[in-house]
Image: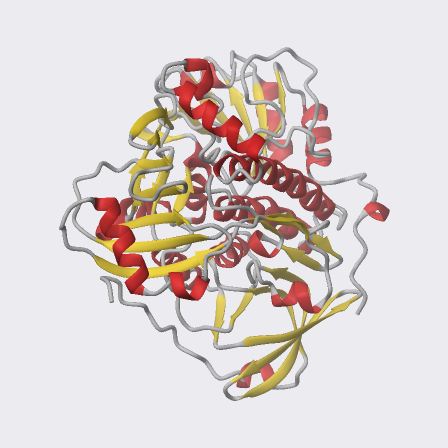
Length: 565
């Protein structure tokens, strides 16, 4: 049924891995969902050998995660898959909220002018996974399909993974293990690791239908619509004329009964209100969960994505935050594995991403409480806010049909160097970078496309042809350090500088967003987060900030303990 042909990825017998078992590999990833595949791609971009296991041999069935926010798209750009994802997906910026049939609130995600990516795209997860598999294979990641992980045994210096395949069972050891096996993580459960939070007592039906409709590419959310009274409904457009509809059902709904086509089709017909033809492509029942592991790092085991944290789908904070997990983790892991940073650097993955998870859970919980109030007082407040929002602008800020995913500003990270100079704007240490249009070698380009996968010192200069000798000497010293830093010049004028990459601030938006004037410098991490900034940086200050950003001096004794074998 439907328009998509699910691929079948080739199974490879494990003869090479079984010879002399248990072999030892530097890095293994468990799970070929979007987050596990992103981890494998990022590992290859960092120059790491990576082996990935998945018990299936295709992409996920059904649309599943469908909304990808601007920051996730920028990460996908860095991974080399942004263009095909955006080209295939449905870009949107407008969200509309209705009480019964009347619109009470709308928002617009369109960022300020001068960003490469839209606020959000919708794309079925199977399309995303297929693109990620192609990219991982292209980069040389070793992907093994139909390899079921039967168990994981933590070791002092890594982990042992027990595998079952059609051609026999075997063990394999690894220095580092990234666990990305989803919300029902077998690894987490087998090891008895904690996951704490709240499961909301409500059920929702996802129905993907194929139809030709002239609805705009917007997010529509209804409270108490006449076609589904006393409940809520969400509508999204996806690629290939697939429309995603979420129906609130209530906790007493029978999941198996509600998934039957004879139950779903009348609901969709009532919603459409006409006789247009449609085809049911996929359906699923879900409940809200807002919870996370206490720690994402357990010795040499590193948990990412839904294996580490779960949120309700309203707000698109699941897969988006999972991409941000791997974005934060892999450059740190690469430095540790290459001996360029202490193992304690990985404690900051745990600290920073649990901080981000708490932010996502807090916002997701508030949305869930508003959408599905569980007390008379809560429902009274919700309905009053919706009624007032019709005519009172102040009440529209109270309407919460899902606060949409935004990247975490890691302002409390131990890797940040605090400001010593006064700056305006949001590009504080710990912030994910804002994009801006630039020109490189006379061609239009984007700021973020010039960065990533390495440390960069962005130096704003008035004339790249008239550089101070001290800047040249500093750039040479930084490039030759144990962790190299590339100096990239940003200038309001066209020009070149021998020995430097140069970007022209085409529309002045870099200077505006980064409060830059001649002499201003920013130290940028490999994941495009700000590590430090100065009005005038000297070599000692940059080296000190780099040492801090790479975890030098962190207390290794503070790391989460490894789970017992």
